[in-house]
Image (cartoon, rainbow, N blue to C red):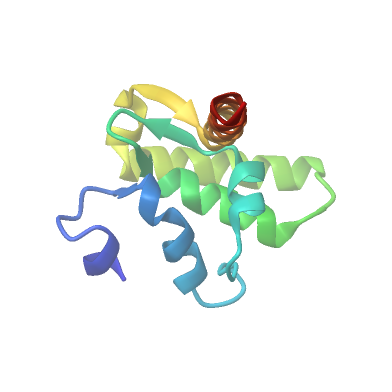
Length: 125
């Protein structure tokens, strides 16, 4: 999959490929299509060039799989330890210029559709 979605090992996937990528993952991480509701709920940060970092995708999928896990002190400590390890392995993640998120994208898409529908209705009358 790495070669299909990130052929140059940049650690990024283009936003337009996100739905296909998540649908192609094996359970329990994979979410079959239509998976747009999940993508919006993940609220993934979108960086310049409409790219999403693999670490953000991984974090969102793990949270999704774990669901409503009781967040004890031990669980929070484990989460912090994982974050520290991931940040060491993915130093480029810190330098991202975040320009949007999947929630903002959904709002913009909905607004664009509303405007287009209103414009079409206006032209008809």
